[in-house]
Image 1 (spheres, rainbow, N blue to C red):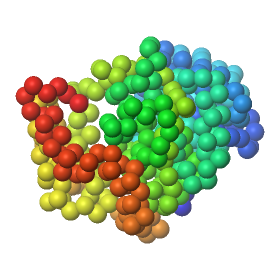
Image 2 (cartoon, rainbow, N blue to C red; image 1 turned 180 degrees about the vertical axis):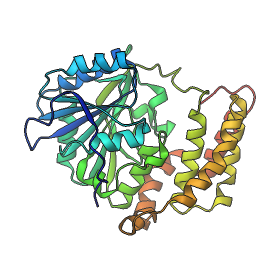
Image 3 (cartoon, rainbow, N blue to C red; image 1 turned 120 degrees about the vertical axis):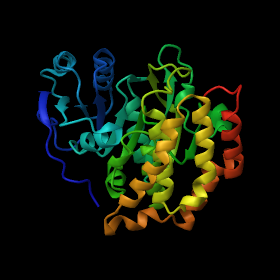
Length: 345
């Protein structure tokens, strides 16, 4: 399996192609305004040592003045390329299109408000993937840029594992702010699902990788520094909650869950949404998830990836459910978090 043949985006600035045909890693950065932060992310990526890499910046609709600033940052650079996509494809679709531009055996996605924690972080991620062929992805530790403390809003793992943030363990997902994926596994799993736009796209990919017999490894010694405060990141406005609920339900349906069985989770989400003033978003998300699931048609060669094997289910149980206490306990926690007096989570 391979990624679709996306139309070549418009070249804006930087190299027309990587300096060498074979190299270790592509660093992909999605841009949508926030020029100052994005330029810092680009500089951090270009400063990585001990590894042959190319930096791809895919702009998804920045204002002209911000696009000019990004172009100036990579003008004449032999190791970086700025392209402009035809529209905003979201995180999932944008990463797919940026990834398709390169050929490095490792793909490192870096948020445009993040930076590598050390000059050898990228090299460490590439080495980690090379050292363990059954790893599909490396989940980085995400630190608050200003303090160096763990970014709690980017902790995408069971809360019981937070004391092990500096350690390493197998997991069932990774956080988008900073992660590395083996290109061959990314292509074999079909990349991200464009329909997700943003939220849960990493978990959806990870499920397919795990179903292929691969592992996802959290590495507390491989870190990026994130400029969004862990206490302020989740916004209960716009459409973020809609995408959160819709995408999680859609993913469950994709992998064979029956719609009636998702009702307790859906109701828990509605209680939480009501507590935080976004009930309408959550209510719209249910029908939207059903529509996406009905429209989902995997290619014949992909169909088996959406039927979890016994080995995949065992992996999920050992590396996620065992740390969360089972579905009923998780739903009770969601319900309690939605009650008056409980803050947003």
